[in-house]
Length: 404
Image (tube, rainbow, N blue to C red; front, side, top):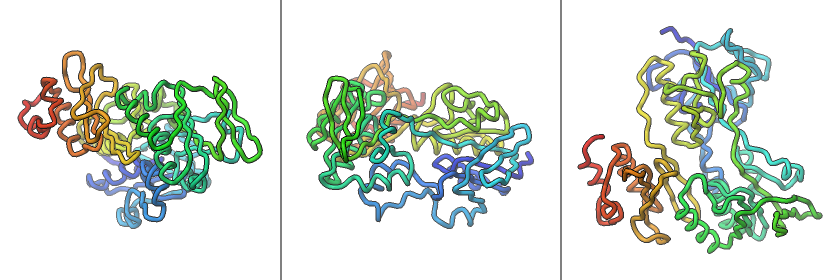
């Protein structure tokens, strides 16, 4: 296989991960990493947490500063790709230069889903997707400031936690009946409501915006039930959209992201996709772990190597002094509790109708997540009294379970 040049578009988690994997697997050819931000590749999970809480002490770059030079990677930062000619295998950049490739990885990620009603207010309205977004938001998160959050997903709750810790007064608006409704079972969502309320967060659930106005220096959100919320700043997070502009331009198959096979290969055999932009079997996973895994899969596939096996899906959130880890299918039909609900540490186990373990959630119990994932990978069926008994070692259970 003669591959002399690999170009990666998107200098985020997946793009930086692919660079490392390519060199680790012995690829010695040219690698170019193109990113539209001016910062070297950095991790996004700290943006709603440590970047806000400890801005001077937090390092979120993915690789050391000398990594790219040491590994002979050409970094093109602050540069957009304006055109992709798949037939010619050529990219045109915003500075007018072109790049030819033998293999291309699109790791373009996702962009914030916009809410025009709030964007129209202008100053004082924020979203959180980039390092610059987080740094801009820092000026608002001060003692006594009134922060209105719109969207009660993972980022919304993490922001609520960070804002309260920094002394701000927080009101959160969520149109669903519970926060994190798409990513957590009701038992956990209800517990998180209690935790945030105990810290002073005003939760407005089952709530929709009717209007957004500015009254002098005050921003006002009016809910459909007539409730008026006044704030000094608004931060909204209502999801993201996969950045598929280049893929569409190149004529790739796109459906809820760039459609890829099990090897992260798109409908063009020379073009791969990984991370938030990649749709595998119609499903996109917007997680740190998935970006790293797909980066590795794509790198292996580009070099003609057998890719690593798919792991049990996993992600985490840190909020309100809680580390909460999720693995498996959060749409599990049945849930069991290990420990005392609402009194960390405790765990939740999700089962399908046949009693197979398909999901696990640890609340300040992360040391058990690896064993829980091993049990899920083996499609374990264990008695409810075993799963719910804190005296039963998950590590021992996973060691003695036969292979699936």
